[in-house]
Length: 339
Ligand code: SF4
Ligand code: SF4
Image (cartoon, rainbow, N blue to C red; front, side, top):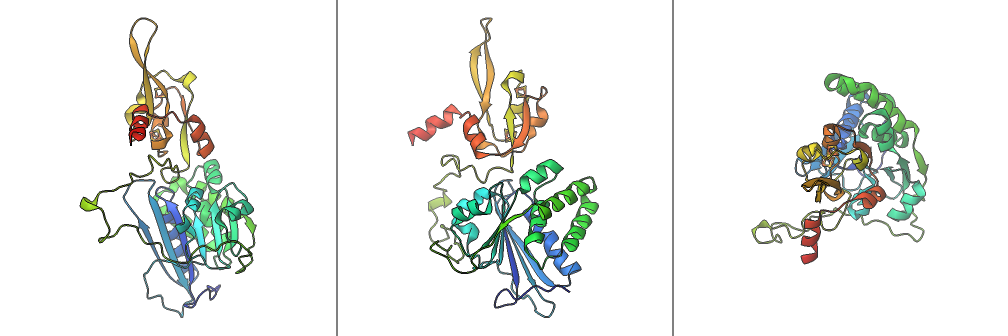
């Protein structure tokens, strides 16, 4: 039996998944933990923490493994993980994402970037960094990226048996989503095979700052909250933080193919479509679609399905594309400037 190595004072192997709602971290953690317990004979525990039900909100999933002779009695979050798996690279902007990652630990990131580029961003010389284009693999195979992340984890964590996790994926998808099984198995294999890695110094920070190893507490608690429970910073709309509101896909608009029928606008849950009144050339004023305000788009793709002319199509999210093609709602712009 391949036992979890003694990674910390409690003989645990601890993994934390950092994700946003809709990317499947909770299911990935469930598959991984069940595979360890049921197929590799370990003791194991998992839990997930998330906010509201809306897709796009931050999600953390915690997995703790121990050899069969070591009991796991605590159900506390994984604060000092051996492995952190980041499902959306924009989360790296938050210092809390790598909080507590042990010197010599492993960071797995869903990104097209190289491990050296990620290392420069996170400023950790002492950790092993593994990059996988999980979104690209999932997009090609028609699945969600969570199984690609499981493949990458099996690649970089020697204790994890790919066969055990493969069987876990087969069991979950055969029971509930049989039509997605093959795509998810291919996505898992892609993640397993397409990891790019760079070793760290295993404890020598070499002039780079280590991330603080502490649990990040919420700024507001029962003693410090605003009167009436008011939220003083209204999400990411004003700050234009494009990180946590998307799932990896966005709609692209081809205005040449658009007939301005508004079918997209009727299904969009976040009023992302921007219109302007123009003369139709025959003396009447019509509403014309001019673009998408990506600031509010969560990538649900309802508009793409609704569009009768294929003027809308699904593409992989990129900050550069969003910034270049965003058409801002003018009303909201005025409101922002007034503040
Ligand atoms: S994907 Fe389309 S329907 Fe969904 S939020 Fe974005 S613009 Fe609206
Ligand atoms: S549904 Fe398609 S054709 Fe109709 S307004 Fe929207 S983008 Fe244009």
